[in-house]
Image (cartoon, rainbow, N blue to C red):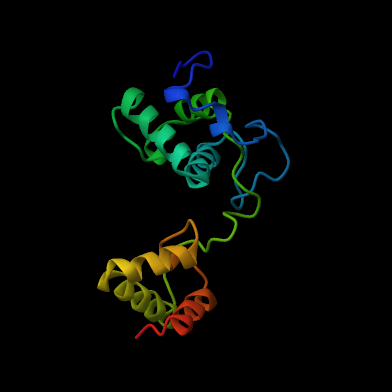
Length: 161
């Protein structure tokens, strides 16, 4: 990594080899009422980048460990630091309308919370059951980040107690 010019960690190409758009592409950058260039926008941008995949998460982690004292939470860094990372690594803007396919985690309604608890208990019961959930859920393993309908589908399909 080079703070000024484009050296990349461990052979990971800028943007992790993915097709990306410039960091400041304008338009509705998503994530709610985020305004490009603000700290909240940059935090959302880095968090969305990490959710793209393991390479991107590892890139941010290595960067944070090497240059930011090991502090991996983007919200704990100033806007200039986040902007520098996003610019140097060609981080795409956060998705429009929030994180695609994911429900933000917040207070859960009691019915969904019960479904989440059932799936979590099922996962903890055995490695095989945990793998079934991972295969079913895709890249987002936290049951609380899925819609109640998807949780119910899993519970019904796999006869989760």
